[in-house]
Image 1 (cartoon, helix red, strand yellow):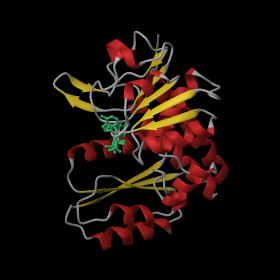
Image 2: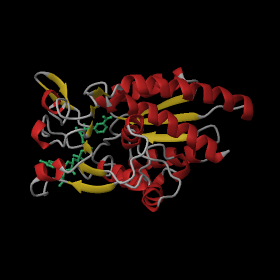
Image 3: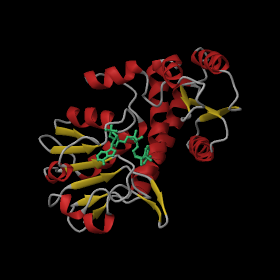
Amino acid sequence: MILIDGKKVAAELREELKKEVKGLKTQYNKIPGLTVILIGEDAPSKIYVKNKEKSANEIGLKSEVIRYPDTVEEKTVLEKIKELNNDESVSGILVQLPLPKHIDKQKVIETISPRKDVDGFHPMNVGNLSSGYNSSIPCTPLGCYLLLKKIEKNLSGKKAVIIGRSNLNGKPMTQLLLKENCTVTITHSKTKNLKNECLQADILVAAVGMPGLVKGDWIKKDAIVIDVGINKTDKGIVGDVAFDEVSKVAKAITPVPGGVGPMTIACLLKNTIECFKRSN
Ligand code: NAP
């Protein structure tokens, strides 16, 4: 069984990106910049943003965090995004989710210029991805995809089953695997006999948020299993996959923590650089 080491792959990717930033600096005499807007005091959001800022600085990106209290008016945030859209030193804009209830998430997403949308949430990027055109790709599914490609270069004809249909994970993952010529089944909370669906999978991606949902006897022999889930339990952070059972059947599996998680931030840095390259 191959343990897919997301920490290691993410570190390698960051190293590549660091070199790329150096090269871009020489070529354009400027560096890509990432601006994150953080609203309120949500503890996990504060940690994510701190990690994003640290990682961006480490690879030589220009990085800025704009903080607002959770009482900030929607209008103020939208005006700031418009200002950043017109700021040439900003390559990528990310508004950390979740947002306070009085701020319309969709309005915020649609105000970010699609050219600077490092999260890949803007409807134009979502449409481009599903049409097979060049687009920003949401960071977590992009990370899953890069991990998969480390294990299996040619995914063509593979049967992929995705559990979860969120805009953040399941749907973009579907598009990425379709583009690789996989036959994709997307499942969700209303799917009948999930176990049977999973048993067909050469590639299984679980993005649900339910500890240990996927059991050992749901897995086809030699499947590749990507566990996106992050669940806080008494035993610490666990994924959506019952790792001890599934790792006995699968050909390769991502651990939680240390699998998909580290790839997400590395892919955010990658997206920032892609936005910079597209705008230059
Ligand atoms: P989400 O928006 O809540 O979506 C969960 C999906 O799972 C929904 O499509 C839901 O179906 C489906 N689902 C719920 N119960 C199910 C069941 N019993 N059987 C099959 N499907 C079921 O969640 P998300 O934002 O995609 O996040 C999913 C997980 O990934 C969470 O644990 C989250 O913390 C984690 N995550 C990890 C990273 C990372 O960097 N590793 C990044 C983002 C998220 P319906 O559509 O029918 O409701």
